Length: 358
Image (cartoon, rainbow, N blue to C red; front, side, top):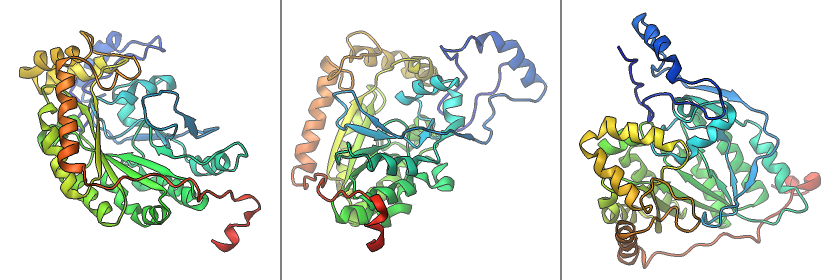
């Protein structure tokens, strides 16, 4: 009898950490013994979190095809459990696995707001937009309790430094008061990740994220509050959601989004060991087709690491997706306003001179 698959998670099993000698495959007999004795090691237990003492919090983005130069991640690991998440690979650096551990054992940087303030006080710092978050979602469920992201936004406002946010969670609505303050000085842009309008696919692929309906409502609420909102259709997976580009674009434009962007799925690092079993479990009838189509967009491979090409893909399918995005931009976003970050409002807080008047 095989162990029960975890409920409400994107990973259907544990996998090896390439930096560890322990192998989960070698432990199959022990796992089955636990299962027979009423102990399910893969049960959907409560998420664990561990506080880590971070030394710094603002990271330079060295990849030339990302679109921003700085990122900040208050959480390592993500409860959302998206089956395709490229950030899973980074969890192995902490002696945790990229599958179940990534979703259930979250590392928390509670001192992130203090570290951000220290960074913005540096003489060498030149005002620039910092992305929340470049790796894992800063509004994942744990944020409701810890409020680290909210404190970070308050720090960004205090220093008048621009901030970008990308999320899949409607929890961002909680902080609309701070977002409006930041937007009063053109210091914030929000990007929602919406890659399907199919709620069944969303539930399987992104099990602990906000529903499609709630994300569209959040786009509308923030947009009506004057906050610039863009949408990332990411990743586009040929054979699963690639046919939805124009439909998504139409709906998010109606909700108030001012632009869209996209990436194609690529299975870098251990992501292949996580996504393909998920695909076979949930869509066995489409498994071979989707796998072959993903491979076709990366010149016969499931991953492509070349900057400029890795997130857009190549070949006929990638070109078709690109043309769909371009058509959507012309049809639904040509009249939308273009926004830029204000870099002139930045102020350092040394000696507390500004705090006296804030």
